[in-house]
Image (cartoon, rainbow, N blue to C red; front, top):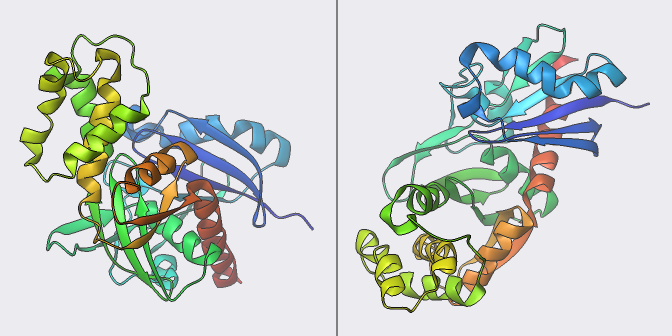
Length: 300
């Protein structure tokens, strides 16, 4: 017997949805319509529009959502679950409601706590990927990197999230490359591996970050970096600076898209860090499938 449902990762800039048959992925949707492009009162209409092909074919389907859709700026604000965080705690904090077209819907709460650096920290969406990682690759302990707009470094023990830290690497790269002097007046950019690695090596010297990034301008002026490779250099700087926070000799999983995890794995070749890539969508689907099974059990 088929049991269709929809898994949704609704973030700040992107919307991703997966048509599921129990724990099997059947189809997917990806649109650049994250929270930044949706008015507060338009979440229901936007979701209805995006899911219409599946709803027309299969009728009313359960929808389970995670990510910034549960934030203050999202559809329904769902309070964070505190550290240490278990799957059961996420289940207990999940917000349930019914959509305007009759679908039972849930929003996963996210996690909050104090980082190992003593700062308050939060995540939304990554907790599902971390749960999925522990399902896909069972171990007593995990250390994982989840690169993205706001990268996360997280520790798990027994499948439970014990601590994490956020690094704004992706957003900083975007700001520097698109809205600063460093990215002004550049030609069409070309990805260049040697220039990326030069950026990583430069960051590993440990210079203060605001001094470090100015080298994107001075190396260009000196003819050391081609104007078409500035983005590669800035990517190396931001990722290299982030990876300085990982202890030497640390083994880690890096969870994300193949293109992004490969960039982190390449950077790790210049450090004494061992990164094992794992697909972020696979982790998200496994994590949300596990939570959905728990929700179904709780509803019985």
